[in-house]
Length: 115
Image (cartoon, rainbow, N blue to C red; front, side, top):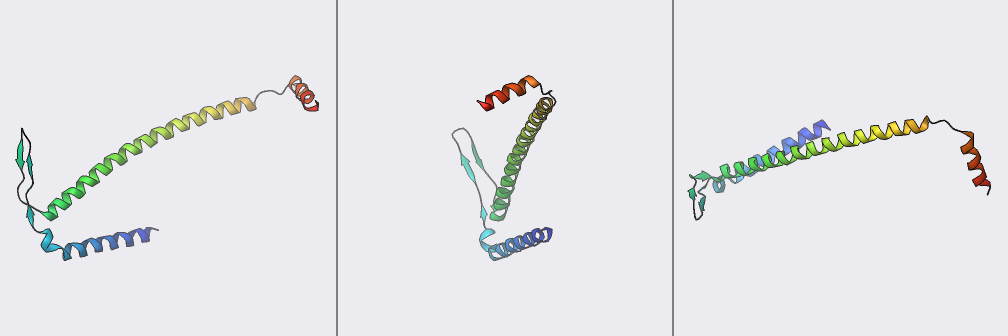
């Protein structure tokens, strides 16, 4: 399985290199972004599309990591609560197993079964 993962990563990187080489000219054009709001105007410096693509990718990775970390903490808390609940139920089950069996309960059960 580890080898398949390694082969998959190598194939993906090969695909990225092929796409980058084949699209070098269109991706090397420069762009400038402008933001014109009523109270604030901003214009970026000239950037190549490669840089814009890499920045967008890294922003996506960052936000995905944040959501993944939040989900991981939520799941850890849920596991902790379920483990605590399981321990409590095990204690209850063990205490019920250790109850003595009395003959009065058996007689009332036998009477209700024969009726």
